[in-house]
Image (cartoon, rainbow, N blue to C red; front, side, top):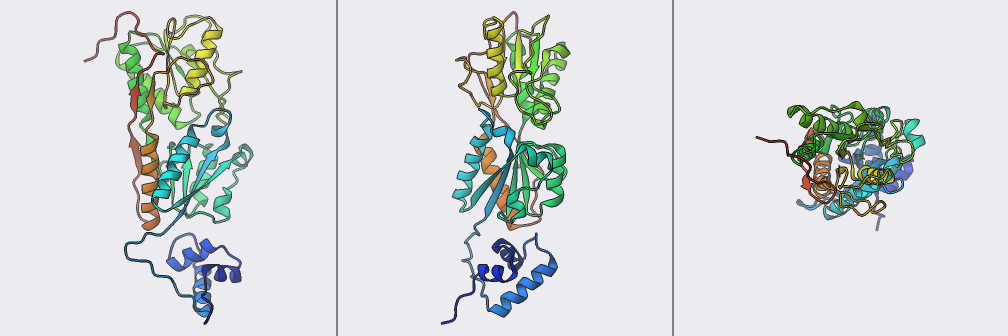
Length: 345
């Protein structure tokens, strides 16, 4: 009986990956026409017979996920949670995921992810923000289907699944206003990520709608702009003069650090100053105050991004643009009412 010819046999003869052979024989993008012709001719010459799948049987894919190293440092493991959700959702769709953490050095030198250069995946999820130069390199060089998750950088060139950050910032600031706060600060380094900027714009919109003034000295940086790493030592510099009665923080990690910084200065939360966060990712490292926050629906984000990716893998013309998911307000102990609440219509 003649030996059954496999994709790996063809790949070995041409010194290419099995994924490349599979793409060439199935008509997928990411293979030059010259190489596709060589693979097709060799497959025919070797007597390769394509295995026909049942009519309703879906192809198994390996989906790549990349994330910047800075998001996984110390206790900033919010993206680990999202990745686990993606992995679990992919398994239910008979697919697999492969995570690559992009180091500071590779991001700075604009090195393409290894899972792409080594052709290990058929699709790519870009999780979280990268430096603009790196993000646009991905748009220019990655030929497999790709989708942004929790970032809108290069949104004109890539589908995206994001939380409605501006709406969340707007709703959280409105809540602080309803609780009687008129002196409200913001914690987050602007122009670092699109998520922080959108939450900041929601904060400003709520204040402007109600004629509530804000001060530049009430806007507190929480991370460096170069790599976006939260910095407990050099950032979180509290105002020297007039203090806000409440702070809206761009994430729960920053909220928890701010609570500790305030305690070090003799302020209690929420007795003296109220603090609100974002994400509903509670860090246990600082304090015991339950943080009022705006929850990101990580399960739905993961489900949606896997669904869109599979649709793109099955149909190269499939696109959704930006898919924006609402979050959920969660009230805990870190905010108290002061004075008279601002009237809302």
